[in-house]
Length: 276
Image (cartoon, rainbow, N blue to C red):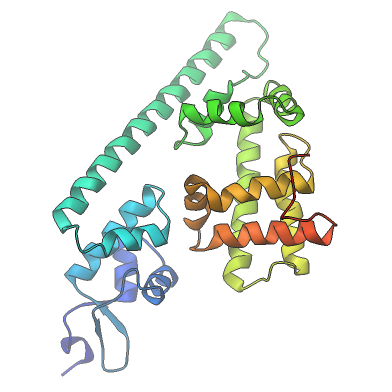
C-alpha cells in the first residue's frame, strides 16, 4: 500500500499548482487554521480532499475582494452560514467588484481618447493631467468616489491638502504610475520584514518607517507626527486594515507600531501626536 492510498487527497504542492498560490501560502493558512488539510500521509505530508479545496477557493475569492485573513476565517467558520449563503454572498461582492473594474476600464478608455485627440490636433502634446478621481480609478480599482470627499472633509483646510492638490495638478499618468510602483515596493518591503520577524524600533524597522514617510512626502511634506496620525487609521479604519492585512495577517498593527517606535526615537510621543 502506498502512502497516498491511506487518504484520498492531493499533496500541498499539487494543490498549489491547481489553485495558483504558493506552497508557503498554503502552509501559512494551515498554521493559522484558515485552510487546513483534512488528512496526512504516513510520513506526515499534508493531503487535501475536495472539501478542503472548496474552502481554499472560498478563501481566494474573499481575499480577492479585499478582506483580511482574520475576517475570512470568521466568515467561513460562522456556523450560522451555510455553503449556499457563502456562495450568494461571494456572488454579490464579485458583482460589485466587476462594476468597479468596468468603471476603471471606462476611465482608462476616456484617457486614451483624450490622448489621441491631443495627438491628432497638433496642439501641445504635454501629458494629460488627471483629476484626483481619475487617478484613483486608473491606479486603484477599489476606489470609491466618496473617499475623495471624505479626505477633503477631514484634511481640506490643511496646508498638506493644498500642497497635495498643487502637486497632483502637475502630474501625468506616467508619474502616477511611478508613485504607485514606489508605494507597492515600500509595502512589499514592510511585509517582507514583518514575515522575517523584524522588531519595531530596530534599525531595519526605523529605516522602513522613514522609507514609508518618504513615499508620503511625494504628495505633501509629512512630519513624523503626521505620519503617526496617519498610521492610526491603519488599524482603526477597516479599509486600511484590510489593505495591509491582505499582504500578511497582522501587518497593519505591525506597520503602525513600526511608525510609532520610529517617531518615539525622534522625540515624538505617539500617544499625543497631532497633525502638525
